[in-house]
Image (cartoon, rainbow, N blue to C red):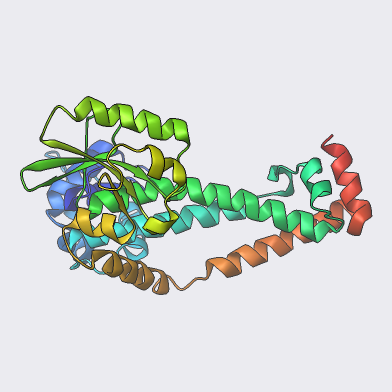
Length: 304
């Protein structure tokens, strides 16, 4: 994905039924920039072929306007910040969709854990496995989103094996492997990263970095501290990483403030959506299996 004005116009247009990549590409060329795209969307009715055939129907123009209102906070913001708004809103939208599509049948209930934790009430079982499912889904989805945020913040994609992105700085190329947290690498993963580091060490232009998107140095796992080549010089964590990639002191705080503003302007509460869905699942359980320990035992027998 290209985090440019043209790329954003194409991204929004391709979300509309009937608009494919080629048409979206033509629209991006016709509208020139994101401000014109947002403020003069109706001009798409004049966008025609040499034979006078329209590229975009009125119903599609209306849908494009709807998508613009949904995703773009302010068309005059820097394009990287607009993209950040799009990424965050899309992440939240997909998370809520996953939440709403969750059913009792999609909860993977482990009878051994239920017994080990002493769950003898159906509300405990539903709450535990519902939160577990949503957490796993959100963490996976966030991994793709945070990659986009880093690329919007100043990083570039790399073609060096074992690394996710790069930053050009001071006539050096910093090759980064990105991990979400300071405690997500096994000893084997650290050793594998050491192999990748060794492979580029003979090139003085390439500087390997393990980047962790949040946390503090005190939280970095023992596996990383004791095994990673050139630790701690070969790591950047939390604010260090974001400020380094953006080449701006305080950038991480600005990014968090921007995300906060985006969320507040969305007028929704994820916690409320979460609670409402949990209550619906509990009600569904009661309608299908009854209440209390008797219903828990009934369901566990289905999973053995």
